[in-house]
Structures are given as C-alpha cells and as structure tokens.
Length: 135
Picture 1: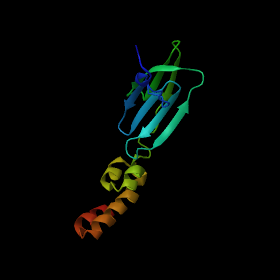
Picture 2 (picture 1 turned 180 degrees about the vertical axis):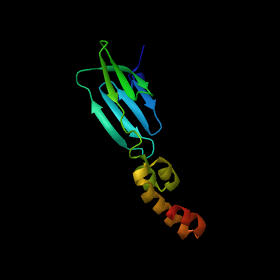
Picture 3 (picture 1 turned 90 degrees about the vertical axis):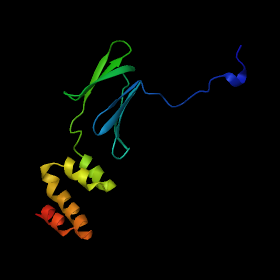
Picture 4 (picture 1 turned 30 degrees about the vertical axis):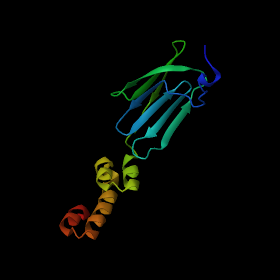
C-alpha cells in the first residue's frame, strides 16, 4: 500500500521520445515538438510544434539529412535539415574559437575569418604565421 509521501511527483517538463546528434546540433523529439539545439552555442536554433501528430519515435537519415517522425497512428512526418553547417563558423567566432571558425566557414567568409585569425597571431607577435593568413 502506497503512502502519501511515496506518490510520484508530477513533472511538468515533457520528456523527449528520442534525440539525435549531428556534427553541429542535437535534435530533441518530443510528443508534439521537434527542437534543435546548437552543439556550439547551446542555444535553440529551431523549434516546430506538431498539432496534427503525436510523435512516438523518430529516425534520422544522415545521408539524406531527413528526420522522419513516427506518430501514434502510424502517421509520418519528415523534416529536412538544410545548411546545417551554415552558421557554425559564426558560433565558433563568437566563442573565440577562430581555428574552428576557419575550418568550418565557406569560401566566401574565409578571407574575413582569416583576417581575424591573422590579427590575433600578430598581437601574439607571431608575425610569420600572421603574414600567411593575411596573404
């Protein structure tokens, strides 16, 4: 027989039904929501509620970049992860991880990030290395 103090407490926070980890994100799947968290900044970068489906599971296709959501009544919904690495370089730059920003930026941002890295090297009196990145 359970006593009053042995009653489980109500937890208002919903628990994820599944999660997935990619290079730059953690994807949490809740019964009525898909939330994407940045691995770099630990901030929510995308969230989508589902009114017409109660999610009970998910599958992530790494090659096609699809998240397939499985509903209670064999309903299916999918989301496409596009440009996952698009802003990773900005997040690295904000955190001061300039080498990682340089490794993850597109060619159009490379000169900008390389200039910042060169400035940092120059201030550390590493003139030869700085010159390579200025060039």
